[in-house]
Image: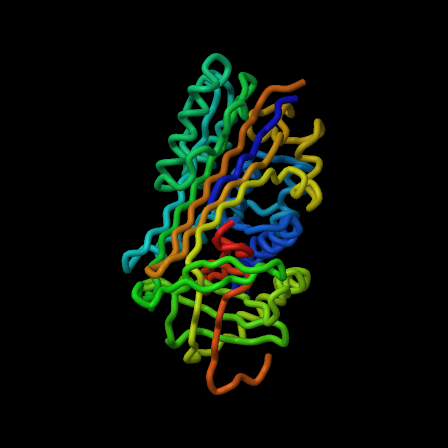
Length: 393
């Protein structure tokens, strides 16, 4: 039985409009966030990046393994139209996101041990549908060179934000297939903050004191809503329909309660109630990075069989000798006066083994832990989701 390692590397959830693929993927994204949330600290992940890599692996799955992956992604199975529907969604997003000085890049690749057989149908789907062309490497005799090549590809596709998708020793000579997906986003605010207005102020650390950080300030028209326990603010990116949404608890220690109540329907309702409002905004400048192994999370979500000896990825190589080994994920986000920069990448490796009435003056001061998402309101597709607990960890 060979094993497949799915490394995810990167840098929210919302209503997915009438697009059933986006709606299912957003359910998956919310479940990822809720599973990872108890770990504490800053959190950043890209449900879009994770979905992209799993979808590529899904195209090589068969039988119960394909059923498991489809269920985790909240997609119908069998559905021969899913790969085309997923990539059409990604293409539409790229068309909307690249304009006005904004940049959204998404690239996939298929790295294979030289001489290792892959099924023609899988190769065609990988290259023609997911845009993942075949690239041959020698994992067996030149493992570190192969690792460096994949890491260099990832670094280039994320504009230097994700340097090491695979750390030292994470690949060995039994590797046979690596599927990679990289995502990079840079968005300029529709209403940028003036640097002259940025000044230091305390950020409250969930009842554990404060840390001084730089806060941006602006009063402008934004999408705004309230629930009994939180304020919701939406800032748009110039020249695109993409949005940055923040869910700010009304109490300094209220983030965990908001996360516990978080579900696709809840977030859809919150974002669906946004209205234009003049808001006095104070928001911290920050950078955040996260890294995880997602094997246990995906197993809990229903994909345990895909990591076992009974896995069926015969659509990849024509034999039932592949299984998922691990899923690793890295993410990055940087928020400043001008806009947002975020990056992500994903890799899969096969190895041989045996509502409230608002006051007249609306103030949104994000000086304590909050949840944020980057989303495409038109399709509802999740790009990035996370939380800020400490702007200076």
